[in-house]
Figure 1 (cartoon, rainbow, N blue to C red):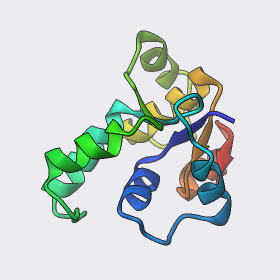
Figure 2: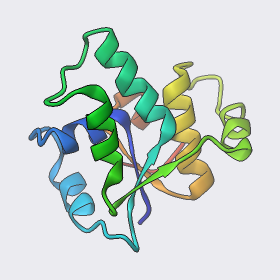
Figure 3: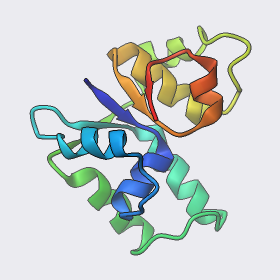
Length: 132
């Protein structure tokens, strides 16, 4: 399985919070340089925005956090490619309009990956394979 991490999953994993499910921890524990955890670049923007809005507190300064969370050889950043941008427009009308979520979901769809998330709106929309 190719795992794409939703924003909250990356936060919980790097901050070592216990909110990850057993299944998510298992998948993430198997990550390797040959089979990395995938993180959309939009996730970095979303985390920076959440910190700026004081909705999230990090254990270290933001820039350092972002560098360290994506520097591991078991994490691979995914840019917003033309294919991913175009895929956001194919999501059904019942899927919510949050731009970051749309890009993260489109990323998983284009890569044929499974999205690790606990976001009920994404799970219920059934527009991408998810692992809760």
